[in-house]
Length: 119
Length: 171
Image (cartoon, helix red, strand yellow):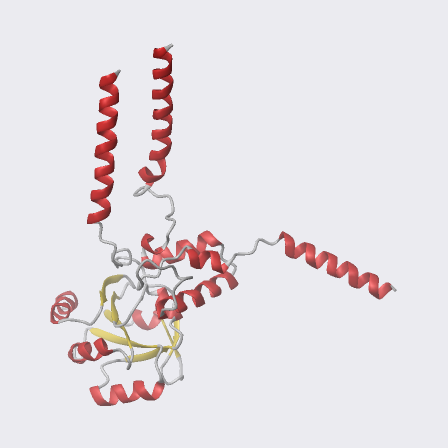
């Protein structure tokens, strides 16, 4: 009886500890990495030699405890930003990230002023 | 107010044209410029005969090192081989050959038929080491100085121009 109780407690706490750990999904990373030797395919879609190697390296990096962002950073460092489908925010592409918000604010202001004028 | 709207429409039009122009003229091919002037990554790679490992310390011993990724199944590797043989005669340059995803007997035959230009010969069975060097296809070569800085990266087979370029740098 005691043994069963201990076993139940062990399962409960081990499950709890697993649940709190943030797991990195390799498939998600593969989908966000570009196959450099293919035409418009991701690492996930491709069966090329290059894609197979990248998949192995991603697995190793996850095993080493690297986060998703750290893996993208590693790949960008080796192959440039082109390898990542969703580029990281930096000075070179800052306009691309900021411009939609500027347009939104400016557009809102324009609509507001037009409506005010009509009234 | 209408003037402002016209200016905004013109601005949007120019913006769209600008985006199209930048996208169409941008070189989307893999570019090695991000690796130049960067430090050589840490590595520990097994020698071809499994006798020992090579690390960055082996590169530090020489003024210049050319790391060449090759395989017996790679046709362009045969094209660049005479250039590697010529480079192997230069005292100022050490050649580290990394046999990439290859079978040992075929690799040995390749070197016995065409000659072995390498001072050090290692192997990368599953290609994982190649990723550390930003390799995406072979042959590729990386020229490194004594301070472990990457001076140049050559994608594809080494040409006569590349040979002259290397000689110019190392002499």
